[in-house]
Image 1 (cartoon, rainbow, N blue to C red):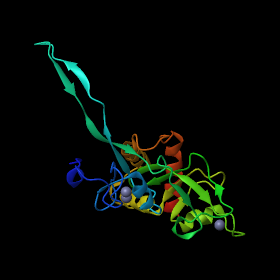
Image 2 (image 1 turned 120 degrees about the horizontal axis):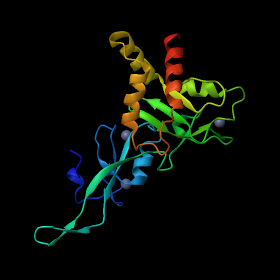
Image 3 (image 1 turned 90 degrees about the vertical axis):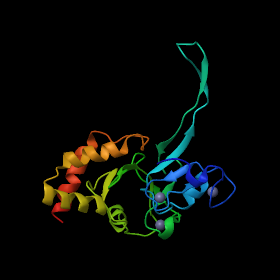
Length: 210
Ligand SMILES: [Zn+2]
Ligand SMILES: [Zn+2]
Ligand SMILES: [Zn+2]
């Protein structure tokens, strides 16, 4: 299910030069790409879940019955993130082009989306007078739960998704928080803190009244 597929012997299908070790869980094709091509094609899709292929070095295992040795290797895909691959995202400018007066957001800015919590390297625009931070986030379809020192927000998509679930099957904010935490395990360098639950709850409550 998560094997190399057609990429078993070839390199990156886009550049044809580098080793292809990265796969996006949310892109339609799921093809294996090199790190550079993965970053290039996710400049505006920073909430996609990325996996990297790992090959552990072989080691010797001793068979207890006949005392023989076996060479054991293992390979697997492990979750990483676009922020861990150094993707930076610029608000207020199209196509993720950097602002000349860019202002870095909180170091551990987290975006809550349908596929989990995402730690993002976020930059605000500072070249357009009066373009407030909360407006920049809203223009990106991200809903802020606190106006001061923003460090967490939810996408319109996840808030709409939860609001519908809440109305139809009484899904609680804790249920959502639990599911998103399970989806996030090992995907974010700094896991969602306990504060995230109250943030999720507050964002959902505000969304329900907008
Ligand atoms: Zn490539
Ligand atoms: Zn993707
Ligand atoms: Zn700017």
